[in-house]
Amino acid sequence: MKDKFYYMKMALDLARKAGELGEVPIGAVIVKDGEVLSSAFNMRNQKGMATAHAEILAIEDACKKLGDWRLDGAEMYVSLEPCPMCAGAIVNARIKKVYFGAFEKKSGAVFSNFRLLFKGGLNHVTDAEGGILEKECSDLLKEFFLDKRKV
Image 1 (cartoon, rainbow, N blue to C red):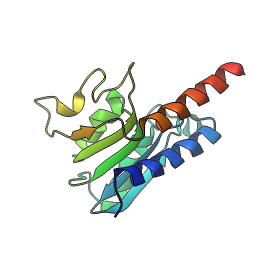
Image 2 (image 1 turned 45 degrees about the vertical axis):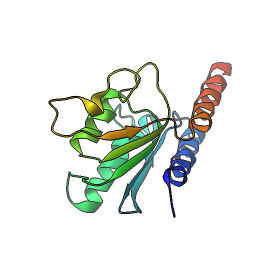
Image 3 (image 1 turned 30 degrees about the vertical axis):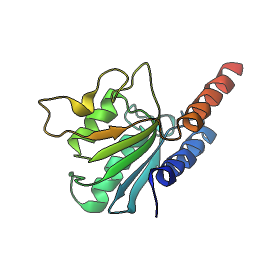
């Protein structure tokens, strides 16, 4: 049976692909009814778009595949705690639960700072669990930024 670690490993593989392209290494996978619905990695530089975060791209693809903006019952696996923009999109897409790897102390919007997924008054509340393969996710980001500083 596929579990949260299986899907987080998929998100990590996508994050590595982003890093190989010079993008911040973040990957996201959306699963519904045990099947991968969509997956993506950061592509801000490749697309020249501030909104081309892994989560946004995965949500857009999943919505296209389903022909609906509602992703009721879907779960997202992402290698880094979502930012405020992505957390807002997650809530608006009505994703059931988000699993993430590394915590983002500066701009994390799930637990670290803004707690947007749980904010009262929004149309939907999304459950969340952080720290899935946290060390691997965190190490990948640390290595990426260390390499960037060497250049």
